[in-house]
Length: 223
Image (cartoon, rainbow, N blue to C red):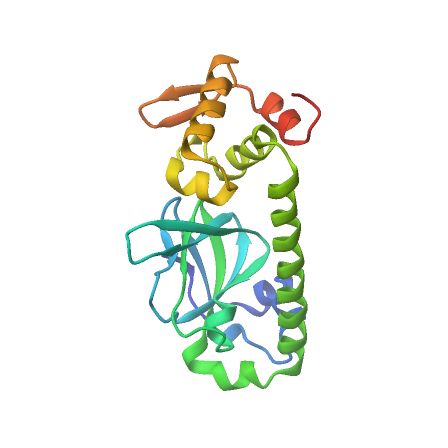
């Protein structure tokens, strides 16, 4: 994590941010602006966050490790959104892992200094209830899509969602579990994308050669 601007934020920066909308008190004296590089951990799995993050720019992924060593992708986080709200409100004690897919810029609120004020702030609680409700609706929609859309469309969408700088390099075992398909079926569709010239397999991962065609497949406009 790189601190771009330490607290307190200037009043101008604070008022130009979305934070005044989400809190009933001035939280700028507890807030830094930070940046995470691609593949850098935002929340360390099993730890207790020191910050409530508001993702201003970028995309991240949420994952959970199991005792047998397997890792499950849970969700993807796109700006703007909160990160660490479940731990803040006590829904879970330890964090799931969150890793940046692209460079991420966040407002980082030092919750150890203002936890009680936040948890007693009616404005924040109202917004966080709405935020969590919308997240649940989005998760339901994603589950429905995974059940009803063909793998080719879902994989094309997944590749575009998780790629950075034109490179897709997610682990096949995690992707097959997330998409609810066999490892073999996943590899078959990936090989077909390579054969069609949509992807090029490289040492770094799969280079996206035709993002427009992948988008058409993802949207069901190209088979």
